Length: 328
Ligand code: NAP
Ligand code: GLV
View 1 (cartoon, rainbow, N blue to C red):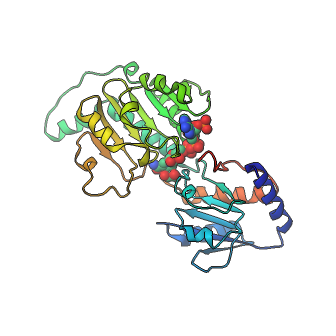
View 2: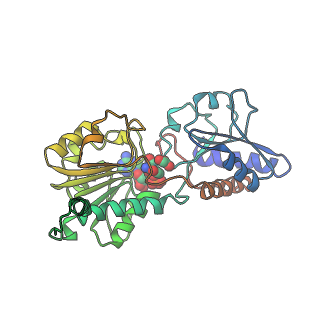
View 3: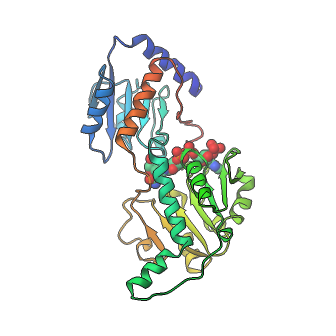
């Protein structure tokens, strides 16, 4: 059954049951304090019974998850909808999910502006040599660096979805030349758009800074490799804010050491937390942040999830439904 058909089918079932029949929400989110989420969901959906999942718990209609265990789904084959409290669903799609359940991810929910501010500050820091000024000032030196031309710093944004489009447009406001790359063609004001595998090389050779905001799928795993990164203009700079498995770590280190890339800002890693012996910790041209570029905001996320549960109950289709086949 297609995704839309699944949504409509499930929404019809819920509509028939609502509002007299209470429904169950099962919450299973790694590294998340459940209590404020349960309180927020219950306050907005008083007809729902909301509980933290434990092995053997009562079967639910709806799941709210982040990196759940396979056992969670094995015990709940009846689930009708799965809400992921993040934008990326790569960890979720590694599991065997109930085939009839719709998978819904967060769309923005306060993350897009965070991502825009993170990436813009990074590009501006790089463009204005602010790291070098900070080092000089710390050493007691009053020095000047020659101002660069914006036209010499075209920024390429990989992924023009909810987050990538916001980032590309924020960069364009600062008058950087902006290129964007997506799977299907996307038209955005002030962004030169490229799409599909056939235009990837043209996109890369037109960019000096590369910002990765792709979802992690079989097609995009290892996409930040030596071949692709070496196509960036000399002195290129990488900002990876999507997933660690997009990047081939050794290829990045080799290109920085050869001088083709001037450095990188990395927010995501293959293993998180980044292992203490990983060479990224010791490479001075790499800056690390601990997967914090765009955090899930609880109130915004609850409001979005509740709005979608309400819409489904009214028989309306919702956005943000993941295509399991496509991987995002
Ligand atoms: P989204 O709305 O689904 O956008 C994905 C974009 O990637 C779309 O433009 C899509 O193309 C493009 N794309 C997918 N596969 C592609 C391919 N094979 N070739 C070229 N383009 C491809 O996702 P989002 O909400 O912007 O989030 C993007 C990712 O950011 C998430 O998946 C997550 O991994 C990451 N993230 C990280 C953090 C953090 O704190 N570091 C926070 C939130 C999210 P189409 O437009 O043609 O579909
Ligand atoms: C965070 O990485 C997310 O996918 O929301």
